[in-house]
Image (cartoon, rainbow, N blue to C red; front, side, top):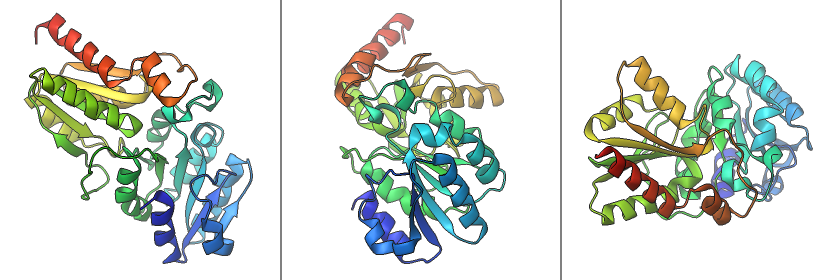
Amino acid sequence: MTYEEVLKDIVTGDERYVVLTAENRAAIRNLPLHLGDRFIDTGITEQTLIGVSCGLALRGRIPVSHALATFLTMRAFEFIRTDIGLGGLPVKIIGGFPGFLSEANGPTHQAIEDVSLMRGIPNMNVFCPADEEDMVICMRKVIEFPSPFYIRYNNVQPQYKHSEEFEPGKGEIISQGTDVTLLVYGVLFNQALETKSILESGGLSVGMINIRTPKPFDENLILETALKTKLLVTIEDHFLTGGLYSILAELFIKNRVMYDVLPFALDNKWFKPALFNDVLEFEGFTSEKIAKKILAYIKRDGK
């Protein structure tokens, strides 16, 4: 089942749902035929999209609103913060082409601070599926959640059979390990999975957790995992500041504990525009380059 199919199944069965877009129909091209006046295209007007969504939500509707992630989270930020966040309205906003999925687009179209921006808004939650299957599995509970959600749209084909069990705030445990545990969200899940295999082939005990929702965050799982493993590795197509690495720093400081964390993120830079696989290669996010850096780090510190 695709994202469009599961969304159609959810919204056609409940008149409260309205699907909106700011001229970003790539994932929902066939829905207008089925929804009639419950499908609204505001044009390239992200602020208007959020304003309309909030108005509908105040009148008992549940908007599911789509736009390019970079413009949705930045151009309409004040509207999301003040109108959705302040009121805790059940608007679900879907950011298209986030992170490395924007591929050949330059910095103006690269949503690599979106997780940071959205998780900083009170009442807002954040869902970053690993691939299309993960998105489809979790989507119903995300959309039915009473609070607002930002969703990083991801239609990458799966390389792993995900757990059907999902609750916001719960990570998906792929494996448990005592030497290294990989923490990842979103489109880099497949690279993390391949990294896990490479490290295991070298004799390491490797854990891996799919952080489905960076907010709410599975604090207990990560604290428990850190006690059982020598090194935590965060992997994300996001700025180092404000993303998963920052979430861990906040968690550990709050609990007055210290753990060894090796981050893979964009450190104070945008990524070079290119096709997805070329971006991974150039920026050092292929499984081979991630594994090589982890092994060098372990050897250097004698872990």
